[in-house]
Length: 288
Image (cartoon, one colour):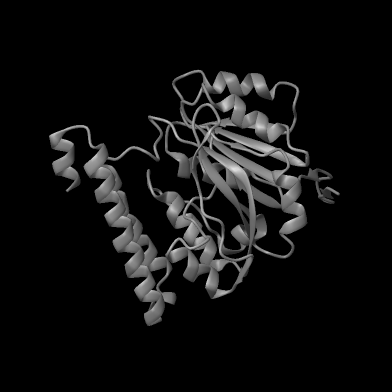
């Protein structure tokens, strides 16, 4: 049953699905349709066009025709974090879901969430990586648990154990986000790492769904697969933000060890990516 705001008289949807869009004209229709075709239709789809210079916005506008659940907002290019924040500022659903504009979700994802989330602040569902033909390229190992509570959520997130750094394989209770004022920081990259870890830190309970419900597209040109000196600069800024946000938790020696391990792992992954994906000697030298 939908909730009704007794002040405005408006029906509050169960889900706000936030989708940043930037130059994904080939993929965004499938992403949007995977939302609009959900078996649970109490939802609003907030599309944030992040200054696309291809036909992405036109595709979205055509798909939105005649469907009042879709709301489209445009902004000058400011990155996924800023787009997601704009979506959060305008969301009215009980639960928040992030879906990237080149990915898709299974048609029963939202319906299953309602039966599984209970009193948890977040639900994390299984996902895989697929190619442009829908073939699974890389499965992700199953979760090691079905529920975590209290500080154990944050401790797991620091080492990417069950709580991964992406926001898009999760459903968040909106009042938990609002209660703690959590937002994506002003970084062009790794902003999702901070948001995911901060929500893990403030959440009281997390539950896990072993069913693969999210399909992340592996494609050339995506921001998640590219590497640049900017990503190294943003990583240093990310660590500084985390140091301040997690200050009270980091007084615990065990949490501090986990945090330092997180930083080492993070930088090692960046160095490997730089070795494999830099496109010129100058870029390689700047990364190192």
